[in-house]
Length: 479
Ligand SMILES: Cc1cc2nc3c(=O)[nH]c(=O)nc-3n(C[C@H](O)[C@H](O)[C@H](O)COP(=O)(O)OP(=O)(O)OC[C@H]3O[C@@H](n4cnc5c(N)ncnc54)[C@H](O)[C@@H]3O)c2cc1C
Image (cartoon, rainbow, N blue to C red; front, side, top):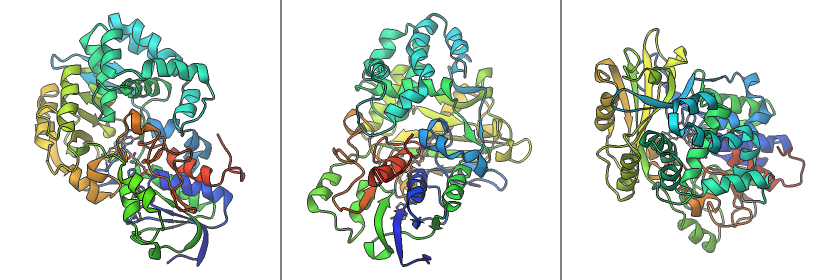
């Protein structure tokens, strides 16, 4: 039961963006309430014993460069609430079937040296963005605006607006470097021939060198817990197990924030949104889904390439062509027979994730929107090619299809983990093209989920900017 009859602000949904909005509002207002449908807060930052007792798995997000780099989270001093980021020595390895691998090391120098002939081109591309990562993110991770660092942004746009295939094939000579770059861009699930897919590869690579690709000690849930502690220590109130289906489920408040996607917002009854606005929201496009697998392992994955044994994240895709084809197939509504795989091995650097000597692994591949396909056999077959004997070290596994992903968290519509397609035309016009994309047609209702700029990922900035836009000029500290 809410403690009051009337609040300054109510936030619906306790994912990283809902929590970030609540914290921002709590700095300005006296009474802020956060209502979460599930039994625990966190949304995409939860951890659970999904397989066997004693094994801690990240249900959704696992690899957290955006949380460490987030200009908003940086303001909060989250380590004082018990949060610890742990860095693998190698943020990313990309193995090949012959037992070799390319990798991103924390050091740009070491990485480019290992790339051989392509090292110079890689370093020249990345160096300015690694050197000015904070300035770059301050401009990129917010709604459209005149950039604070126009020269840096012009340089970024020159490269980033190209398609991944174009930049990889013109800048790099080796198929292996092109493959590594394709694996980075493939996180966005957008065909690699489309404009601006290079942006994802450049940002993820720059983050690997500038801040690393850390995981959260004890599980991603600890990030949600730290954000909740930060909010509550400032007087905020949280109620879990409170799904909001209608305005009548809400206590009275001056302003409401919804950490939900457009389709869910439209389905909440009695919010007073105009028909015109609902029609615009109905045109919002969702992307493909993911099928996710977690394993409890007897021992670490027996990779052929040694560098994979030190990597927090491993990408599996034989070539740029194969990765591109798997994205195209999924877009066409088919399950790929050789899916591109993103895999994390948290227990290698965080022993608290598994009983002594045991290990965990986390992986997903892209599937058509809403697919109920269990891809675990295909994923395991593919891992076997780079790590023969993988199947023998599996003690137990848990599979979440794209359809099950949406049941687990209604924000993952059809299993889309980015809160809606994040292509060039919907990158900054999410959920609709507007000077204030967070504001809805109802005066006191705001959207604050990853369906608003700057989109998917654990950075809390959709929540922060939404709250900031509502309180504009009323004393909320900007970064
Ligand atoms: C398998 C998977 C892997 C991922 N990997 C990464 C990764 O490694 N790194 C990364 O940065 N990002 C990753 N992501 C993406 C990241 O988790 C999301 O972008 C992020 O969680 C979005 O935050 P959010 O607050 O907008 O929404 P969510 O985190 O989805 O939170 C929304 C919350 O609102 C609640 N809610 C919804 N409707 C209602 C309602 N009507 N009433 C009350 N509560 C409601 C939900 O229960 C949920 O708790 C991954 C996601 C998935 C699913």
